[in-house]
Length: 325
Image (cartoon, helix red, strand yellow):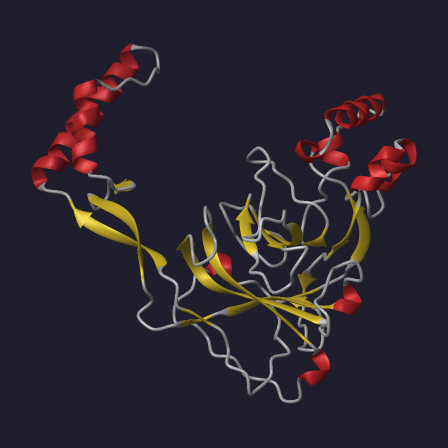
């Protein structure tokens, strides 16, 4: 059970006992999606968007990743099978230890020729390359949030509705997203009152199931979120660890970076060390949204990870940045 929603201990508990954590606390909303049939006037995951009929639906023009297959020659197929047989024999002779000779390694590199995988059923090299969509691909609705449901989340002046869409395919560093690999994302803010007639959106011809969210209603709850240990002063981390150990707890598992679908709060860095996300203006960006894999939406981003959206704290017009952990 999440510690902020019925557990014995929570970030608020830690702040009460260690007041120095108060200055590091951020408001957040756990969205808690569950399967349902949301309407366009509700906050939702994978539901219909309150999108004006006279406004063009976003499409993706960024190159996407595709797999190219190349058939191996019969001679290279035979060489690979011979290498595989020799490696299995060496492994059996050495009690299960894996060993490859330099000669075999050179042969493998020549046969693979920079490809990322080998299909040993069809004997084809598989390369992952970027290429343009045949036609611009319509994006799919992923998340809609009304400000009334996420009171701690920042909305640009004059807006009360956030809408997030993405191209349901993989992209390598789409425009403005260095060191990012995943769906190309579009974030829109608008005033709900300005939408009179609603658009019936187009559907993409191709999509990956892991990028198509199942419709979900939300059960938002406001919480306090604390940062990953990498973003705290060392002495405060030591204090938190000592206090948590007395309760047979761990700071990272109980108090830092509440998990799941989340608006606001802090990002975790559970797969890497801290990766500062900076805006083009030089400002350190703040976490705005976290979209998680699994659960009722049944998404799968970044090998069952979470996709996070960061915004510039100084200028709402600056492009968002994306990160997957």
